[in-house]
Image 1: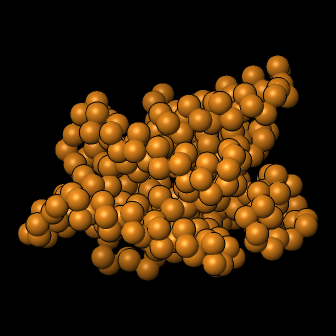
Image 2: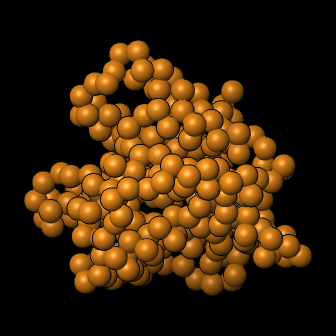
Length: 280
């Protein structure tokens, strides 16, 4: 049952929404905030542990302060790019999200004999996941993207949803049947929810959970040990995020949160790929 956490949680959320909703948008935001704090942000708060593990594996020294400085420097540079060119930054964000989502659906190391096939499956699966969420909630997505200062088309053909499903199926690998089914039913239930709960249910209850499993295995820590190590950096990320949104955007809105997630994702996805998919 725990292997289908995302599907079960999203299905229950969807049923409650259909029976008792639609409710105030703030309720969705509160639930999203809880999920983001519980698993969404923490799954990316272990990058220092990952970097330390990779350094030890490659017989290199690791120092926390230089790592944090370098990490924040990458985020700052990407934040500056968002200011200078929202369109280029958005394209980068979509690209790394596609790769990272597809990458963490399969926690097994890369088979060097089939590297290109695995890359194609990763990109196809990630494209299917992200495009299904975006296309099925396009009016809401369009408003957020427009707020970022990125040009966006007014309407999308319903046919794009079928294209998303094709990408999903092309990314299927029978050895990952359980996570694929969990993700598929999470996306399907999310279709009947507004954008924010649909996205956060996949992000926090599928993607983040898969990432936790991968980190537990590679770092050789049980869940509680790992989570305790992540808490200080989770709180730090939340503090930086709130400061960023308040100082730059003056008030709490949806699109700055996605921009901040993009800043966290840029260095994170490289480290996760190296830890999970290239352990040797």
